[in-house]
Length: 179
Image (cartoon, rainbow, N blue to C red; front, side, top):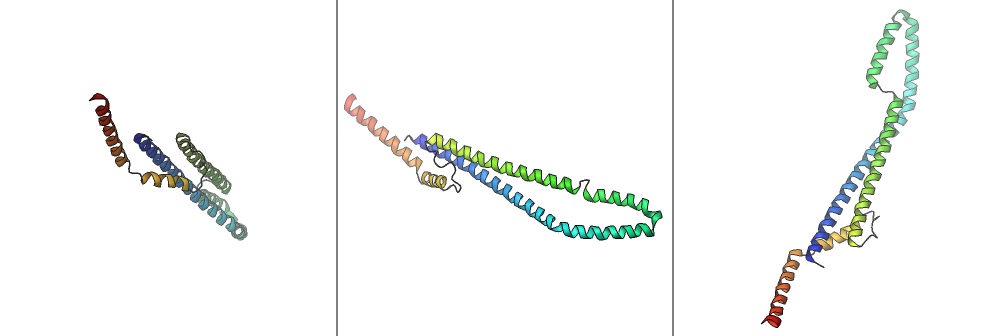
């Protein structure tokens, strides 16, 4: 194998490994964000019965107040509507749930796209080096093994030995055929 080919293979492998690590990191971040969002959704779903009971109690209190103070009712309802709109940030619970669902699907798509990028990088590496059997390796053990083997190779020493052997063979050639 030509020394420059070994250097090129090592750099291609390191670039593929770097891209794979980036994709794995991005996938992990997306999965953490998804788990966090799902946890928040579960918490919100558990709070629904509590909110329903509180809403019923509040509705009874409001109805009692309306009966007691009918002259203040119109102004108070306008202020309440204004405060509720401000507290919700202008978005209803349905809008928030739709937003969550869209975000969740987007995060899943992003995770899947990153996995596809990793597979493409592995496939390119495999095609360039005649090894396509480990494209779907989930823990990167095969590629880590290649990197360890390449990092154990002393390429500068190999290049120096190749130059010395070339110089030696040129001298022998000259000695046999020219002199």
